[in-house]
Length: 114
Image (tube, rainbow, N blue to C red):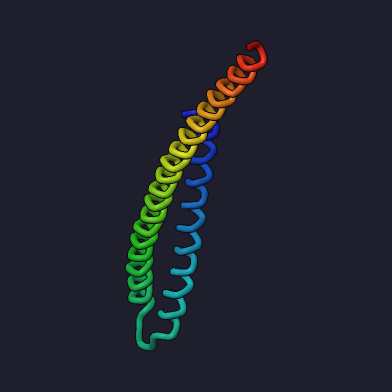
């Protein structure tokens, strides 16, 4: 893996981490708000609910993050395929133009020498 690929992978890892942490911070706030408004719960029950909800949200964040990463990988692969096709087409066109120009030059030089 070259430096550009490592840097791109590092940025992807950072994005995944930041997304996951933002999601989990929001989950902490939601469950804390919920348990604070729930009358009749003991502190232990509130902590159990918070722990359970947080673990569920951690699981959801992981699944969503993996889905996003997989989607990005698919799009990147499609882009590489399209770019490769475009590059081959451009190269083919350049070769044909160069050959045509060479043929034209040969015809012009041949007609002036006759």
